[in-house]
Length: 381
Image 1 (cartoon, rainbow, N blue to C red):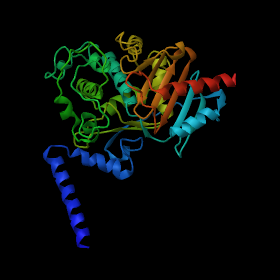
Image 2 (cartoon, rainbow, N blue to C red):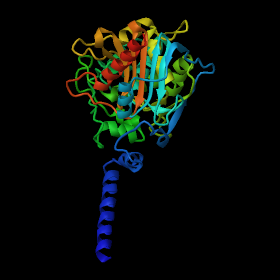
Image 3 (cartoon, one colour):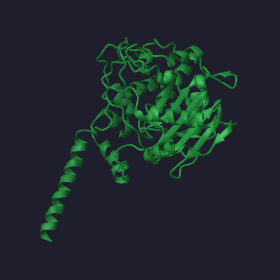
Image 4 (cartoon, rainbow, N blue to C red):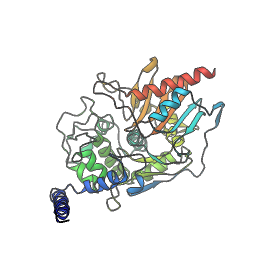
């Protein structure tokens, strides 16, 4: 018993020293991370973590516009897709053909109304908000300097550089380092402070480098330019006009700070996420109303840099199967894939993904979901 007490006492001392270390060196957010992940049985962020954070409501439409069902609506997927969805712990798979639901299925007790975290799909929505702010006159154009809003930044850094991931900021994009910037942004309680301590250390506008901090700083510009919080601006200009069927939630850094984690963390459902795909497929128009300037949409889904054809302004790009494809992407394999020439939108939500290797521009599951969809479409004709 004495030995047991000594061991227990030693463990307790180590825990107290560790906690003291975190507070002394300003890493106390890690305790929040541990409570939200490891104590809930996870090793990193997950699709159902939004209840453990403060959230702001993105109000839905007062006149919801349900997606019509395609005359050839399918309820059963192919065996190969079913097997892959099971392996990847897919929660929802939706295929919209000719602006109608062609296939829709939910798994693992999730439904069409279930809210799940979109992670970095939010970046595409923030870029859309930039386009709307330019259209509204809050921001002059893509070339407007960030320093017009935050003078501490280099005057050569533009809002377009943030949207196209070409800022030159010294943000360290590492999802698995608990002491890194991405983890701090996810679990800390003052994301503005973190962003305003960044510096431009490489020449902006020269090359693509994917950094979540770019989108967060862009969101701070939008917040300052419009005088509105992001959730309200998104609701007013997109969620309501797009006829969403359900409200959404946007995670905040804290109730006190009230800043949306803009580089991630909009929780919604497959049908409503798909609306952004249709909006961009139709050049910024929804039911005859121009929500975005068509020139901005076209520019958004074109590569900014020849050396980095996989990214435009807030959207991932591909020419798989010799088709022009643009898509939204989240870290756990959340996708809204748009293939305009076939009037096709594929939405996949779930818990697992295939990580792209360093030399791969797109993950293997991205290709697989496209292949499986075309296989089903071809078998149906």
